[in-house]
Every structure is written in C-alpha cells, then in structure tokens.
Image (cartoon, rainbow, N blue to C red):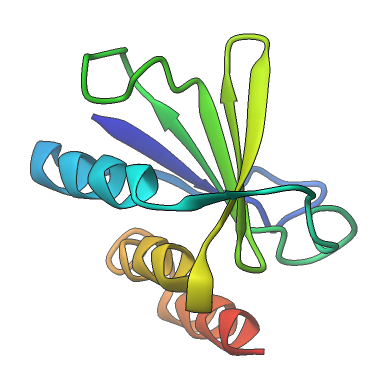
Length: 120
C-alpha cells in the first residue's frame, strides 16, 4: 500500500489518503517507466500547491526500496535511503494520475483547484 500526501497547505495538515493494492502496483509500475533527468525544476517550494508526496506504508519487493517520491511540475524526486534521483514526468501524466486519486478523499473544490494548478 502507498500513502499519498497533497503538499499544499501551510499552517494546517495536508490531506492524506492511501491507494488500494491495485492502485499502488499501478503507481509503482508507472514510476518505474519514467526517465532520469539531471536537475529539479522550480516549483517544489513556496506557498500553495507543491505537488504530491508518495510514501510506501511498508516496503515490498515492488517498491524497490522507495522511501519517498515528490511529484511536482512534471518532475519526480525519488529518495531511496541516502540515494536520490530526479525523473521526468512527461505531460505530468503521473502527477495527473495522483490528482485523480484524490477524488473522494478531499473536498471537491480543493480537487478542482489542484486540477487547475496542474493544467497551468
């Protein structure tokens, strides 16, 4: 199972939800398909939408030691232990997939706001 956190709030807790086993496997398969890039684009800091933070709830062979993946603005910063790498998320496809997973876990107005932010 994989836990998702929407990193968007300052001063109050960010929304969190868990993916089903099937969704978790689908997420990890998509993540493995992304290509490495050399640097993190702007947008991971500041106020407002800062992307999604993905953390396995317990480690399995499927996650290959993944501790955390931060998705924002078409890039993913993946951390496995002391190692980090940056991946490209072309067209923000996996970021959009994560946004869609919010349905039913966050207020509809927040869902629409995040969907609009990702479209920019």
